[in-house]
Amino acid sequence: MKHNIKFISFFLSLFLVINYIATPAHKIYGYSNTANNYITEYDASLITKQFIYEESNLTNNMWDYTTSIKSTIKLYDFNDNVIMYLFRLTTNGIDKGYVLLDANSSNPYIYSFSYDSDYILDSISIEKTGINTKDDEKIIIYDDFSFLIKKEDEEGKTYYIDFETDEIIDISQNKNNDKPTKLKIGKSSSKTKIKDNAAKASSKSKINSYVIAGILDKDYKIYTNKDFPKIKNYCGPIAGINLIYYWTHAHPLKNSLSPLWNKNTFSDLATYMNTTSRNSTTNHDLSNGLINYAKNKNKPIDFWDESNGKDWSFFKDNIDKNIPIITLLNKDPKYKNHFVVAIGYKYKNNNKYLRILDGWSKSTNIFYKYRGNIVDARYIKW
Image 1 (spheres, rainbow, N blue to C red):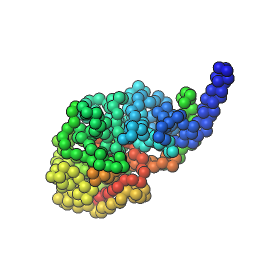
Image 2: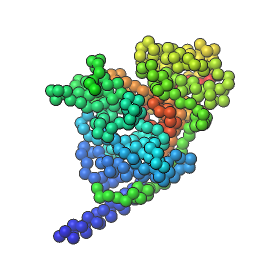
Image 3: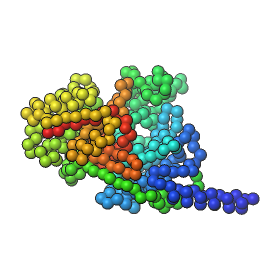
Image 4: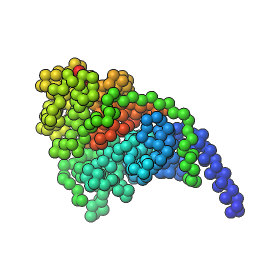
C-alpha cells in the first residue's frame, strides 16, 4: 500500500511540473490548499521566479542568471489573510531589488517591482530604524504607500498603528473593514516541490517600454524625503522638485529654463503649494504652486493638463513626448494620498506598468502596476 501511495504521489508531482511549464506567464493552476482564495508563498515564489527569468533575458536589464529570492515578507489584510508577498532579491551576491506579488488566487500578478531599490515598506523601516522590515512583523497593507501594524493593549483589545508615523489608527467605525480612520490621539508605545527550472519555462513575453530621455543618465539626480527631513507630508514638493530638476537639467530647453533652479527650489515649492502652511498638498495646490513658482521666476509655463488617471493614453502619449507626469495614487479623504512622478512605462504581456520616482528611493527602476485606480495625473510644460 505504501508503494502505491508513493507511485501515485510521483505521477501527481510530475503532472504539476508539466502543468506549470505549460502555463502562460503570470498564470498558475493547481494551487496548493489555500484559505480565503489566496495562493501560498510557494506558489507565489514560482510566479516570481518565472517573472525574474523573463526579465533577466531582456537586454540592458539589471537582473541576470544570478538573480534570486533572498527573503520574503508577508503582507496581510484586516482579516489576517496573506494578500501579498514581498520578495527581496539578490543579484551577484548583492542584495537589491524586489518583486511584490498580489496573491489573489483568481488572478495573481506582479503588483510592483524594481531592479535595484528597496520596496517602500523597507525604505520606511530603514529611515526609522536603520534596518529592513523584520520578517516577524505582521504588516497590514492598506494601500500602495500606507501600512499598519496590528497590536493589542493590556486588556487584549486590538488596535492599529501607522507603520511610518506611529499614529494610532481606529477602524471600528468602518463597517466594510477596509479603510481605517486616523485618530489624533498621539503615538503608540513603542505543494510537491517543483524544480527551479520549471519557473524558467514560459510563453514568449511581449515587451514594449519607454523612459523619458535623459533620466537614466549617470549624473541625473533624484530627490527623496531624506533630502528634506524637516518637511512633513513632503510628497507634493518632492514630486515638484523632481519635475523642475528634469526640465532644468535634462530637457532640451534646460539652458533657457535654468532660472527655475536654485538652492531654495524645494522650500519655495513647499510654500507655493501650501504644504508649509497646511502640512499637506492637494492636487490643485500642487499644479497651482508649480505655475506660480514658474511665473515668479519669470519663466511662465507654456501649457498644463490634468487627467483623472483612468486613461492610459494620457500617460503613454505624454511620456512618449518626454513629459514627466505627477501622479496621485490611492486617494482616501480619511487617510492619506501619495504623489509620485511617472517617468516611463512598460507593457509586459497583458499588463501595464508605470515607471516611477516614488519619493523614497533614488532608483529610476521602480515599476508600479497600472490598474486604472489612479485618482489624478497632471503635468506642466514649457
